[in-house]
Length: 335
Ligand code: ATP
Ligand code: MG
Ligand code: FE
Image (tube, rainbow, N blue to C red; front, side, top):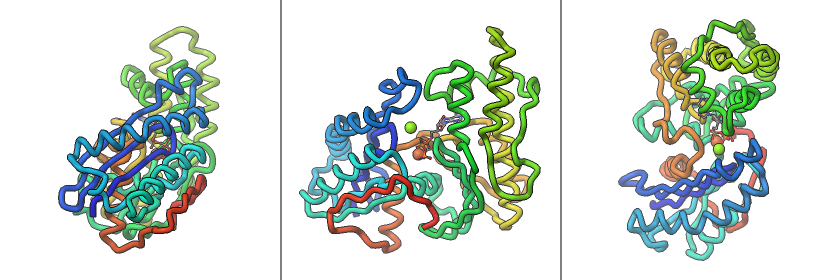
């Protein structure tokens, strides 16, 4: 099967072409960061309109890059949710129309399944079952994964997602949008022991996260630092350390609870080098191997959607042939 995949759940337009024999053969990604930066966050209506503007060109470019014609595509996969309704609608309508015009089937894909399976792009022989830590802009979950489409939720955040906490904290510190990567960069120059920030729920035995109180603690501390750049870096480093401590502790607990031998970590926050280093060190000490997505596939992209669709096709999951536009802006992962 040769797959065209479309990702438009938030503020990146992603397109990928995937071939069973060679894997990923082309990909295009347009980030709308510059478009939303001025507003300090994603403006849904602007996101939708820009997906409309970019998709046709990105698909044409990907086809050229792969030396395919539209007739080479046997299946169109697209992100059907979760995400911004308008943005999803653009990708879904584009994908269903494109497939209808070519007379090929479609496959709606769960965005989080895209993230979750993305580490397997670089480690295709990784065996199930495993524990998955999914940390992104909208989600923070630990899952028990028995196979493609076989997910059990171990626990998740009761308020903000980890990526959201990075972004909000970055905003408090006056860093630009999107804040996660910039906060991580600033933290490199900071002393993580300077501010004693809370580690919410870290001592409790349940698998759950809470990051909104931490954000408030940072806001209070931020009022004391004035224009001192070192204090700002120290606060960034202290915040990052608190988030990582909690993420690592709950991941370790999940691995101990399930007896897992493998951990897969995915989602935008796994681009964070400190988080990677801590997870790898602490889990490998427990005899649990750790797999991350290649850095370029941590945040949203079309390749992970193509990859998830390819796994589903390989396992005989049904395709869709009614060409009805299907979106689920809120769509829990355990299917
Ligand atoms: P979801 O996948 O839950 O729908 P999303 O698609 O917006 O949300 P992703 O694209 O997976 O999320 O990840 C984006 C998030 O990752 C942002 O919150 C961003 O700040 C965070 N992020 C990216 N790089 C880093 C980094 N180096 N350190 C910490 N956070 C980061
Ligand atoms: Mg994004
Ligand atoms: Fe995402």
